[in-house]
Amino acid sequence: MHVAVVVKIVIQKSYFVNPFPIFAVSMETIKKDIRVLTKEELRDFFLKEGDKAFRGNQVYEWLWSKGAHSFEDMTNISIETREMLHKNFVINHIKVDQMQRSIDGTVKNAVRLHDGLIVESVLIPTAKRTTACVSSQVGCSLDCKFCATSRLKRMRNLNPDEIFDQVVAIDKESRLYFDRPLSNIVFMGMGEPLMNYNNVLKAIEKITSPEGLGMSPKRIIVSTSGVPKMIKKMADDEVKFGLAVSLHSAIDEVRTSIMPFNATFPLADLREALEYWYAKTKNTITYEYVVWDGINDTKKDVEALIKFCKFAPSKVNLIEYNPIDDGQFQQANSQALDMYISMLERNNITVTVRRSRGKDIDAACGQLANKT
Ligand code: SAH
Image 1 (cartoon, rainbow, N blue to C red):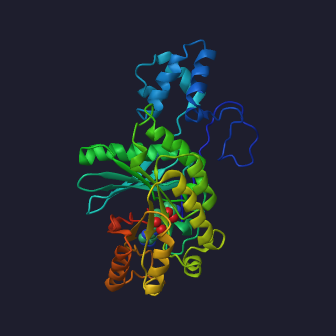
Image 2 (image 1 turned 90 degrees about the vertical axis):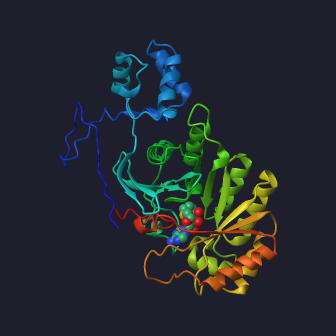
Image 3 (image 1 turned 180 degrees about the vertical axis):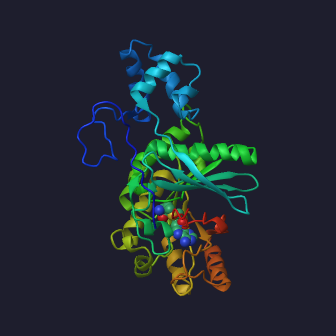
């Protein structure tokens, strides 16, 4: 898998002698991304410039509420101030490099980051909602055998603004193509959000705060393969968004064979962390689960799942498998799915079957791998 890496460096005064002249590097002029500044830091910056602190609020609003991508957009700020900002800072915004539309209406964006790396995000329309499926890392830290993203390995974490920008881009597309704003966000794109927890949290803060996009945290779901320590941290941080756990098996041996990091974070630890999460939040726990032929399609697998779900109100989403090659994974037959549904329902566990969206453009769960 090839991912284009463009080394982009600001060239201005005072070059040092560079043995690789195509990468002309300026030692003093790599400008700071203005979006790393907090609101207070922005206010202080303007005070130091002899302006009013209030100017910081205005710029902050342009950056985080209106999603401005350039200082020129900030029309209620004087031209001189915009030029001064331009001299001091950059806005490292993402660019939607390529957009593909599926026959079912799903839209996939290949998003180019300021350093040339690419991630993907997906807009999923239904009758009433538009959901954004966003990425949290370039590649992925984990090694789930059935997921195309894991083959890219993790290249880096996304910054809060890079996560935020994916949401803004999808909101714009939703307004343009479906005449309505974005309604929901799932962190089910590339990467493991809990292995980039601080940045994911900062992005969600900007997405939900009234000074940002003002979306309700109840409309956001963070999906994790299950990092016990971080699930407990989320509970301690009293986050208001929802949690989904990609379980796929409640038997350690089976889970480790398809999600090898389960050897480090076994089910007993995951369960203990989830008990902690439930005790603190009282939120229903959603499990993502694919049933594969010959892997987890027996009665014993369902019984283990039921036992695992017993400690808290649970919901199981049975996801359709999206093939990533012709390898070891095949979707189980409908009898196996029916067995799961009836046994779970008999045990009062809510179960839903989720159809894939955007398969024709490789935009479905687990298919994001920068093929474009
Ligand atoms: N790392 C996070 C989020 C990214 S994966 C997580 O594991 O939850 C998003 C969801 O897609 C997860 O539930 C994952 O198990 C599922 N998934 C991965 N590959 C898939 C595939 N090929 N077909 C169907 N679902 C897949």
